[in-house]
Image (cartoon, rainbow, N blue to C red; front, side, top):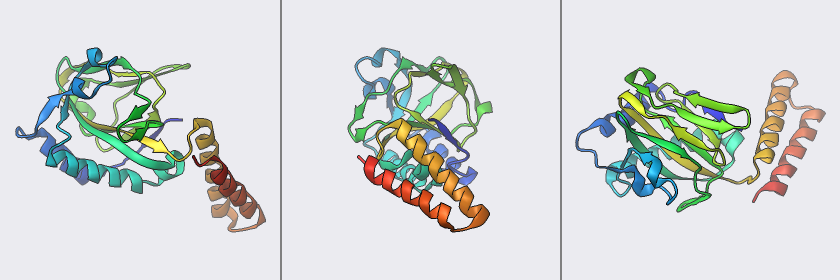
Length: 221
């Protein structure tokens, strides 16, 4: 299951992240340095030095925003949000077809996310393209919006043809390891919330809540 966060950051918040990244003094490194051995040949972008103070401050702020977002809590069941990277792609740069590593230094990669920090009219090309059995789906979301998607999918970032693309990416290790179980729990929780809004706390709501809680206990890894 993939889902957008519309938005994750309000205009003031995403601009406060984007502005220091656009500063000429920001310490950018070749993106290939953080790619797995099989992805280095197709990763052509730049990434903010993860050891620097700017990265540590922005990554901590972004992690807080993600953890507080109700849809992340309801659909992703995050145990850890880790591996946040800030990426910049100029003309001719992108990231070819690849799948994310199953493990990063911070934990297992159950879900990936991309937070867009440039408005779509600030660059051309640069679409995030997800591949699935139903076909390819491109995404160029407004600044401050994010997309969360299964780390199991093949995906790519099309080359930028004009302007500059700024994003943050990272991974979620979920308390619920199986994607099908996360989806079922999300649907069950959505149903009980809709029922509560319509008729309050009644016997049916209590039974659904019991099932939801017991499935959480059974599936929590």
